[in-house]
Length: 73
Figure 1 (cartoon, rainbow, N blue to C red):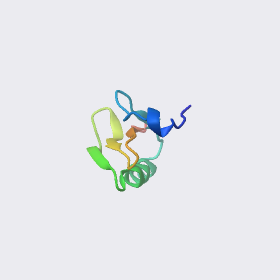
Figure 2: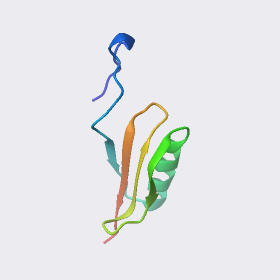
Figure 3: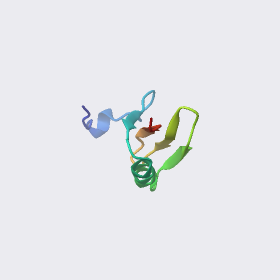
């Protein structure tokens, strides 16, 4: 669950990321690039030793994301 805070109580998000698991590598790429638009990529989406795709970014609203797409067995 998430909610907005009144502007006088706003604090920059820190010490967390929204992590999502996506089954299809193409969908993972699409979602990553959509969230990255006007944001900051901290780790480009790529294949890793544990997953088909993984990437990290901060979206245009300052929310950190981790996108993960597991290897197909």
